[in-house]
Amino acid sequence: MAMLSRFHRVSRSATSNSVVTNAADRQKADETLDTLFEGNLKFVQSRSGYRVSVDSVLLAYFATIRRGESIIELGCGNGVIPLILAYLHPSISVVGIEVQDAMVERAHRNVQLNGLSKRVRIDQGDVRAIDKISRAESFDGVVCNPPYRRASAGRISPNKEKQIARHECEGSLADFIAAGAYLLLAKGRMAVIYSAVRAIDLLDTMRRSRIEPKRLRMVHSFAQTEASLILVEGVKGGKSGVEIHAPLVIYERGKEYTTEIKAMLAGSRSV
Image 1 (cartoon, rainbow, N blue to C red):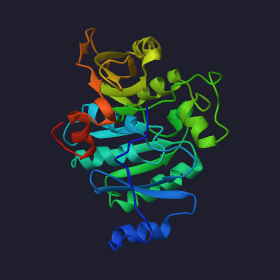
Image 2: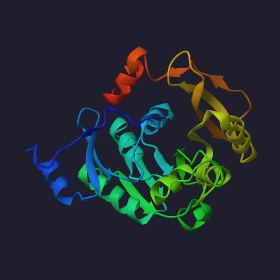
Image 3: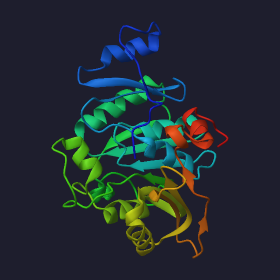
């Protein structure tokens, strides 16, 4: 899925806002400072490495989040999804788990930049050793945007951040789902965004880990094109039976965002 055009880049010389200026002071030469939700969320990300795309926003809006819950993201990258969730749901606490040193450090800065240190925590760790990171059955909800491609599938980027984000180099789909099952309370929920062509892999892996798929939504770039992504939310120990939502369409003609996507990118809490 393409990069969001609504991520605005903040120039070092073009702002007088003290919060943004402080962030720019900590912005490294190989990073950009970008904003989301009409400037209400700010984050630094690598110019050449992994960069946030529409997937993060879609997942954050799709996940069922209830008041006062404790949520964890597996593979949080620069920490953008925990920030989005904390912004949309002011009563929750969020933990992000990330394996890569540089992205963990960047995620820490992004949490501080947005003044969310009291509700968002970033921990470094490998989902394949989740028992060394957190206690079992300690979260109400898990969200995850795992690598879409098998380790040997397609062209592998020479950039380490992109490589790990896109390919199963540091954990397979089964590793991420198993980690989610370990972390969830009974009847807790796990929301995942994944490649549509691997939809069966996702659904089968969730069920094998006793996370029963309960909600499903296909994502299409345009209404007339095939689905490119799938959003699935499952319940740990849930009964069979799935609710299939109407397709989510990203663009209208001319690559104008649809009304629903525009509302998400504006940070609406009523989508």
